[in-house]
Length: 556
Image (cartoon, rainbow, N blue to C red; front, side, top):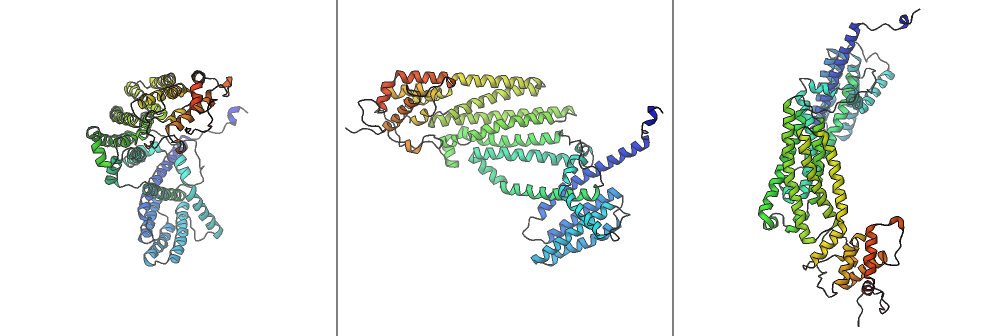
């Protein structure tokens, strides 16, 4: 017998065609189940948020029956007779919510109504020729349990295996609805994230946005949660009714994430409008100045500048992945898609440029009042690097040369980080604040000594050269983000004494040394402290002629 005779016969072309047609019909039905579930979620959120059950239960029951019968007609061409008569007790039980208001009755009605819905789903699932009346009780219970399990877990196979999202998007009857839905699901979280950052960054924008929209984040989250739970339950219930036919729950194919022009344009366009509104608010203060800020929000110009810088940095950081994701996921099936994306991305980057300038201006103003710090300096440098990245994005990605973008980002990032190390931020901050103190501003010595070895040479030079009687007003309140402990805010002598002692303990002759932790900064700190050790010991009260051991000015 030849090996060819052992092979199973190939399926006939008619069989293959029938199988493909059945699979196609199942996918179309699953797409309709998912659409109906989402619509029921929206309807259910609007109906079932009341404190009591009444007409809302009747309306929701009618909506569920209507959706189930519509899908049953698509599945079986007719609604099974047993399902039609089971709809009668469903509506009757739902009417009970209009009749009675007792909580105990409502609980019983709900329990029985759920069981009746399970029977109704079983009737639809078994088809026109099946019957429940002549079925054994244990079989009915088993079927009801299957419906319950399918209701709870059915959304997993519905989304991951039953539905082809690409096919849903290409269906004429659902193209526009699904595009709008996906656009909303993309745009709304983006608007909430960026809008909340802008509101936190600017009280004027927060007040204007609150007056226009009056949205409560908790309420929005509640709507999303309730609607999502109802949609999940409805989707599982409908799937268990019309799709659970013994096929495998899972599939190797996951939904395609490609987005159409509608989704991308809606998301980016919404951000452009939001960014433009924020820029419009900022322009008022660019021209109005301190008097307008004080009259509008009741803050000093420096406090206004301090508020929001890091939120605006976060905005700048988040815009880049949004643009990159939109560029990667956009389905460029028409030349218009690419043009619209480039236009919206360019507008968004232009507005972001104004916002970044606003952030830098705020930081410069804030530093002029409160001085320099490491985090403020590094955040400013990071903002400058982001500006370079966005310029490179325009020069590469928006011009169709995206393959060069990653290399430019890496090179510019490495160069910026190396340059920042070479610049020695701690020493720069220490020198900047010392120079600022020479102009009569307060110097936070405690903060300078917390900067470590890199700031030690500058701090040492200041302590030994600055006369002890220099006018330093320690009564001025420290900025909110000051790292100076409250207990160390004392007179000038105590503060400088503590700083001198810390320098000697950390970098003096008796300080701990380990070659494994050697750095150039530590070496320079030790050199500076060793060169000025006598003066530091005198200031710290550790000289042989001194009798006091605490940083308290000795009395004569």
